[in-house]
Structure formats: structure tokens, C-alpha cells
Length: 190
Image (cartoon, rainbow, N blue to C red; front, top):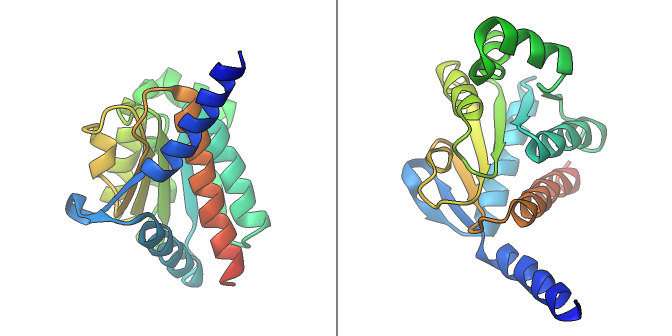
């Protein structure tokens, strides 16, 4: 068991180093530049009274909820996660689950806003539809994905963080790490 634990720990540390970041048109940028660009985008959004929205499914939804709270409570940035159970069940019942994020984003988002789209696979239809809705409203998109390096979410943002692993737990932990890095840097540059 100790060997398995050691290997898991090493896998996590290696994945932090292996995160790949791309900007517009899939242009490669280094991790530090990706965090800095994201912080600047969020600060600009906040300075013009925009909002930061978060979407995700399952564990990624938990990350989205956590980050929405940390962004407003700790970084003093207006933020919200669209994960209320009544909202999700209402929209999925009336329009289909693939629209649970697109519908509220179409209503709430605008050109002053930023959307963080978190998906381990980068292929969840409801996340992709949410991003498409945010783009139609001219919001800026930050993506966090994993699994297949050719996942569609990875090419949809102005800053895209990709974790090269197919293990849900590790991808989610690294996504959480990236989000905490962003919010902690936002707090430092207040």
C-alpha cells in the first residue's frame, strides 16, 4: 500500500508540472502567464461591475460552488455558480439536461462577464452549450479540462487549463489547485 500511496502522490505532483495552458487559437502559454492572464481578465470584469460565473458537473460542480464562494467572499468579486437543484431540475425537465447551463447563462451573462467552465472530460454537452451561450453574449471564457488532449472544451476559452490525465480524482484535484491559485493571486493584487 505504501508504494501505491507514494505513486499516487508522485502522480499528483507530476500533473501539477504537466498542466498545459493555451490562449486564443490554441496558442501555448506557460502556466504563470495563464494564471496572470486569467487574473487580469477577472479583475477587468470586476472593475466594470461584471460577474464571474462557474459551471461544472459532479465533482466539477463542487469545485464551481466552492470557487464562486471564494471569489466573492475572499477576493470581493461578484460571482455565482449555476448549481441550485431547483434550477437544474427545472431546466432539465423543461428543456433537457444539455441546456441546464445555457439557459441561465443566456439570461444572466453579458459582455462584462467571465465564465469558468470546468469539466474533467471536456466533452459534457451541457458545459459546451453553456460556453457557447456565454460566447454568444460576448462573455470571456476560462476552461479547465482533462482526459483527451483533443477535447472540445480545451479550445473554447481565452485561457484554457488542461490536465493530461484520465483519472477523475487527480484531474479534479489539479483543477481545484488551479482555481485556488487564481483566487489567491486575485487576493494578493487587490
